[in-house]
Every structure is written in C-alpha cells, then in structure tokens.
Amino acid sequence: MATFAPGGKFEKESRTSHTYIINDEEVKDYLAGCSIPVDVQKVEFDDSLKHDIVYPDSSGIDYFLAVDGEATTLPANEGFPSSLITFFQFGSLVIVGEDLDRMEKKPFVSPSDIKRLKEIKREKFVLPTKNVALRKGVDFRTEVRIAIQNFFRKEHSAHTSLLETVFWVVFERYRQDTVKQDHTLSHCPHCGSEVLLDKDRMKPDYSWDCTVCKKEIFLTDVFLLFVRVDNEAGAEAIIGYLKNVIETFLLIHTMKQLLEIEDGLVNRFLLVKDGPLSFGGEAARMRLPVQRLISYLRQKHNINLVGVESSGPFVDHARQMKDKLKPGQAFLLNNRHIYTYVLVGDPKSHEYGERTYYSGKLIYKSLDSRMYVLSLPVDNQVVYYNRPELADLANIQEVLFSVARMRCDIYENALIPIAMVNKLISLSTQSGTKILEKFAKKTIKK
Image 1 (cartoon, rainbow, N blue to C red):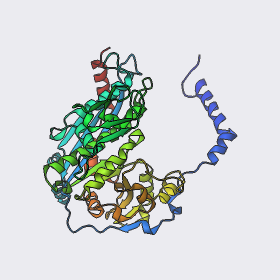
Image 2: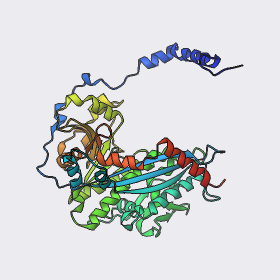
Image 3: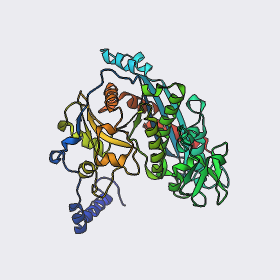
Image 4: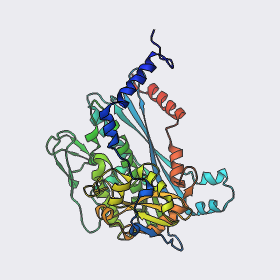
C-alpha cells in the first residue's frame, strides 16, 4: 500500500522529481544567466543625490492622520469553496502632536496614554470576489461594480460620501479659475466604447447612460477596475488595487474636509499613507487627476502628504544603505540608481513611475539612524526621476521632522500612526480569519 509517511514511496519519488530539475542543463543555463540587484558594497553613489536635512526650529504640523486598509478573502460556502468573498476594513487615525511629544518625555507609557491615541474611525466593506451573486440575472462583473459604487456612496466623515470626493477630483471642482465639463472614459464596461462623461448629464446617484449602448455607467468606473474582473475567473486580481484606491480617496476626502472647515487648517496636518503614493493596474489612470489636484492646492496651501513603505525591494535596499548615509541625510532616488541597484530594468529605456506615481521617492536616515523609504508628491514624476531636486519635494524639511516625531518600536523603523492603525484594523490573525469564515458561511444563503 502506498504511504505518504516520511521516507515512504511518495517522498522518495518526489525527491527523484527534484533531481530532474536540478540536473537539467537548460534550467542550469537559465539560472546562470539570472542576476539580482548589486550588493551595496559595490554601489557607486551619486553624491549629488545626498542632501543634509535641516529641521525647522518649530513645526507648523500639529496633527498626524494615517489611513491603512486590510483585506481578507475567504470561501463563502463550505460545500462550494471556489465561491469567494473579500472582507475589507479601513481605519483612519488622528494623533495630536502634543500627545506624541508628551509621551516621548515619559519614562513609562501607560495604557491611558495609548488610549488617547486610539480614536480610530473604521470603514467596512464586503466585495463579491468569485462566483457570488446578490441579484438574479446580473452578471458577476456588474455585481462587483455595484458593490464598489455602493461603498463609495456611503456617508463617511462630515456626512458626505466618497463619491462626492471622486467627483470633486475627476471634474476638478476644487479649481476656481476654470471649469472641467467632461471626463473621457476609455471604454464602457458594457460595450467597450470610449465614452465622454458630461458633468451636466450625470444623474443624482453619480451615474450616466452610455451614449452608445444606453447601459448604466457608474462614477467609480473611472477607476477601470472592472477591466480586471472576469465573470468566471472572478475579481481577485483587483483586491490590492482597490484597497489602494480606497485608502487614497479616504485621505483625499479628509483633505477636502479640512479645506472646507477653515482656511489654513490643512497646513497643520500631515497625512500618512501606508505604501507609496501611486496607483497600480488599470487604476493608474487616476494618477494624473490626483497629481493635478495636489499641484493646484500646493499653490496656496502646504499639502503635507507622505507615503511610507515597510517592505519590498526599496526597503531591502535602504537597509543595506544604512552605513552609507549620515544621520539626517536624505538620498533622492533617480532612474539610474533604481534600475541599477534596486529593480531589474534598463535605466535608458525605463522611466520609473511614469504612469503610476504622483510622487518622488527617497531614502531618509533620521538623526537617530532609523531608515525610511518615503514618497512625497511632485508636479512631474518623470522630471523628478531623471533629475531629482530637493526643491521638487514641497515642505520636505518639516515633513521629515514630523516623520522623526512619529517613530516607534512596534516593528523595524515603524511610525506610530501606521503601526497603530494597522494593528487596530487587522483581519489577518488566524482566529480573526476563522470568525469571518464562520460568519460568512452562516449568513450567506445556500
């Protein structure tokens, strides 16, 4: 009888299978031709990209607001495990700078001190992810589109919806000098035609009728996430992109509120995003509207916005660079450095972040020698990644001073707002996942 026990027949056959790969000349030749980024000891640094950061005598930033999201995909039914749903939870956390400074001076941080920092606002969202239907006669792609539109339609802070904020960005309602009348949708989710979305023809629920097929188009279709959704393969391909879109618009939603509450209030906030300031996949087309928004607002306001990376190749590279930078130095990353020492690619033919980033990336070594990979908004990312200048990064000295104020030791080079919001919204623990799975299976109709 066949056995799967250690040392049994199947284990021996499995080892034999490995030898076919190990001894294959074609495999050996391929691996021999592969390379990984250059070891830091061999890196030739361009000293013109190093900048000594001089902190301001006092900071105009009094509040820190961080946004982070978590997504967990689970089977919707025990008897049909290929039917999937995804639970999202997003958190927005505001921390007062004085509270951070007060805690810094204490020899011991009490539970009541931590409680002061935990005033978090949570947003929940469930997305049908594969072979799950809410309405009879509606295809899966439409189900996903409706779910996304409905989440953005919900009232968030200040009793306004994220849809209102998306409209504000896409149709440039923040401008006082010009009026944008329409937006071109590259293709309709139903017939694939290019469609001109006219502001004056929009319905009260933020939708239009396609001018070609007459079917409904949602405002959230401008993210083009539906392109990656397949009626049979599902929507797993958009989970990460959708999470990033929602995190970004939660931050912009807050920015819009601050501008409306009081003139100059937005200058006193640092908005912190977990991850780089960019859009991925088909949603990358939102890069330009968001970049236009920030560039316009920066003419009259300090838009203090920073993306913080906690993992990935840039973080690996920053860790290797620790001994190459002095405390208080920033290293601006250009095309040549990125595609020579961090990512695979040819700096002569690749433009980093050309279609995805509305920010410039840098590595910063704080005065207490912590390493951070950060991105700050820029007016033109192509110009920045070819010839980065410190002046491209507005208010960078004050932003980096604030980053240093937010340090914590929950994990390597962590920032307090991001670390706390991540812990408070996390769905990924084993016990939490099991609870969600049981809840889904019990609640969904058989």
